[in-house]
Image: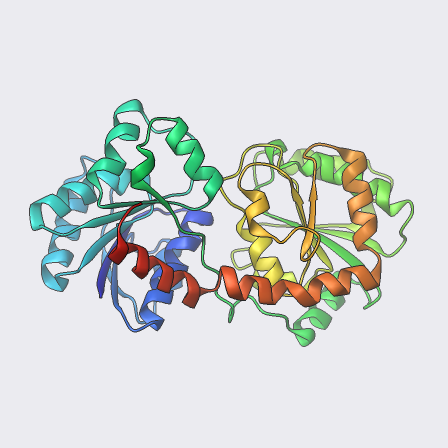
Length: 360
């Protein structure tokens, strides 16, 4: 098949990671893939030098004629079988371009925030395919007015070559952090704001540190509560055992420094990419038992589900996975779980299958 993706976001979040990973997965599977991307944006940089051919373009909003010109020109040149979009500001432009050129459109949604009433009712009807990234997200969209028969589910793909265990990299990162191999490193990667449950995790980790002297925390990310977290760590009983590195564009290598990863969100999440990426690196996970997060692990096998916002439960969960034997048993099962359920070949094949089979 031939695919033209359009995504002119200049951010570097989960939806952007999905765009980059899925386009490359389809290209590796032998499909012809091109993409309209904002020049110089993180997605353009990530796809530079890959088999995905890039066209410069940008949509400030659905009325931006420059974006239409770039997308229509690329579509007329490629003559794709499908137009594909990941971002709300490209939904209607792709639908209109598809209608103009007679090309079917597939759209993904990664957020739980409701669209306006008109878009919620019409986008999934006007696009030939509309994908949620979890069963939970699908239910949320349907509750907010989307037609149930038009919303399909396709999980986020994970590049198993990029996310893989690497003993040498682990040793290098531990040395950089000033830790030895005996350290138990708990990671929390992503946006730093209270809705992500970071302060519950901080309190739980400090409580666990009182019982487990090997325990350290590695914080990667940035957000509106970065300074509040920094101040809370400084005032905590164990500030020297928390390592806050800020925003890192490529977090994949850092999973190898971890013994376990926490995804403690108290706000609803459509999915949980860092949970899956960590497991791909043989890292078991502690995850909030809420929204789309439970779909990212095999509870009791590759990680634990814990009640969001419950400091005592998170302390106990952390201590449970500080047990070397239990943690290593879960680590041994984690990568195979991701390989079977979320790896790029699996998701690319399932995407094509659903395009051919249709909704329902």
